Length: 336
Ligand code: UDP
Ligand code: MG
Image (cartoon, rainbow, N blue to C red; front, side, top):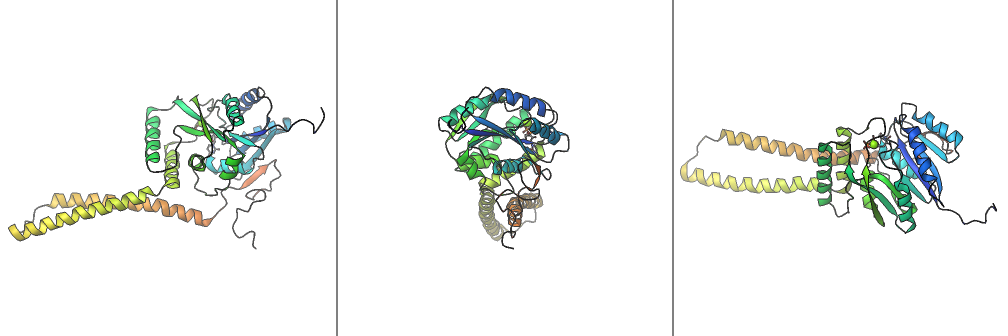
């Protein structure tokens, strides 16, 4: 082979966030290798982001890296959550494009060939959209449908429903995404927000190959709230509008009572209705306070301006403890 004569091949990183995935990693890696070997004309590399696993995940991946020069890994200093693990990944991707894929084989690797096909046609964000959701309860499906509908109704940004993080992103998308340094991240919301030429591929999501889901209802609820606050301040407006409507109705009712008292004299009855109104309004006020609190809490967290993640062990030449190469996430560090 004459070095330097052949045209440079496009390069793609397979980005894998992982948290306690020792049960599936070997299978995942074998399966992925099988798939990428069938895709010609692309230089593939792996980037495993170990999100503070407490099992053997990291050592398994280190083992891959020892035998395969295409494998890179970056461990975070603790569990930061998938969203920030993905940011850490985006920060360290040096290739023309990236494919984000879960380690549990719920995202069928076979789709990668199709994604790359569309990428070659000029699409910049080729995402896998679920046709069905096997292995998920009726309840999870219903809540997720309702969630997407509510979210779409409050924002001008086009939301991709039934879409996970499994997708191919080109360099332009990557560069855009790494500019979002917010720490309360909802990456799905950001994928929609950035725009660019998007293409959906339909697929059937399989149940996990092994191991357990790390997302319980509580974590999903938090993620959903991050999604809403990341898109819109509508909840604040809703409480404002509701307050105005209630005040108006209350004012009319007040006039009615006063006029009635003047004409017919007052009666002392009405304790149950009084109680109902007080309790109802108390509830509404607490809810509005809660909505405000959600935003204030996020303001608080963002103003602390903490680095979104810290780097631990890795084979990328990163010094553990810093945010990312050539980038200053830590406020005050540059100027002092
Ligand atoms: N994950 C992660 N950090 C976390 C939780 C999950 O990096 O704190 C990874 C996990 O290892 C997997 C992917 O994110 O590769 C999706 O997680 P999971 O399969 O548990 O979510 P689900 O498919 O149930 O939504
Ligand atoms: Mg999964």
